[in-house]
Length: 525
Image (cartoon, one colour):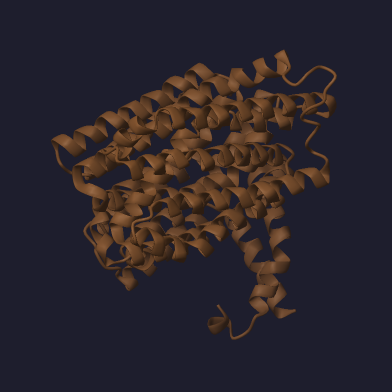
């Protein structure tokens, strides 16, 4: 930009224009919803900036790991991390319920709810640790295919990060429920930062056969985030006394409210984490840790930028949708999030598609180039995944937990079955990508019908046409770059510029003229 304009005034003008541009642009598009859309954009900007930093820190960590340990090392790390996540899922189911309750309740009701949920999370963490210690040999066989003394010791040590992860999830959920989105973003940066600082020495130890170093690294990251979160909550007085309460430690009403949401999300969390662990284990059993490393690249590359977008929306979207009591207001918010996510994901996914060979080589190494066969399928599915998440959140907030449970169970059971078919029958990991696309397409269709029926949301042309054109753009870009193992810079720049231009074309002519006039005015003055 500085080369093109020869000055930094463009940046200065854009920075001054940004708040006004956001307000006016969304006002023209959504009329009376300007304030709400502006709040959404600002919340996404806050959490998105933190998520970008997290992503960059994670990218550098994985790069170091990939260079030092290769696909087998990243495959081992992915198995350990997924196993810890799965064993921690006794507490994960309560995250949505905790955020929603903290956002809805005030005063003594909130204090009572936070006290009750604290002890439920603490109980979940202790129960998880006990199960790990009791069934360590069996878990060894299931995850790693062996039960030697060193591997059993590795599994037993999982209890430490599992307990820490329960505490971290509780504290970050309270911060989110209290709407301290900016401070939450700062806390979330600390974990990846600690991981980055520890990656090199940890890889040295792992290279010498001490896989326990991976567990210590994850534990240190969770511990630092716990300390930071605790300080924020203590300073702002957002955590009540956890040991004193006139009504007792665990209240029946709070318990039932929590379980009404967390009971289903707990089961879906167990199913989702268990499914991913099972798929990773199947890949490792069939093709070794090297193949597991290739699968982890495809899954991580697909999931990292998607979670960047979803986490940015989630910290604002879920509590705000929970606070809206009118179905018309909720439908309007769902529409705004779908529209904004569509505008963002068209150029984002197209960019990922056209530069995916460069990303694999730059972020990992040439040893991982074979993973592109799976990556190309996953990137198409990401377009459907983002929309599915937006619609699924509307189901959870409406407390239709049975519907959410069965749809999520359908996806994960289907994904597990189709992945097993691809791995053991067709002997081709591409089948996992095909399953990924088909299952998310089914979820989008079902959730869309739900939102139209329950929220009375209409599929107007300003919502449907950009989404369909965006999907077509993603498909065409993917087909054109299907077998590419090296980035074509000229073609890539055309695709990136074209997809960005396409997004801008969804703006009205008057809006585009207004934006240009404002920028030109600032540049001249």
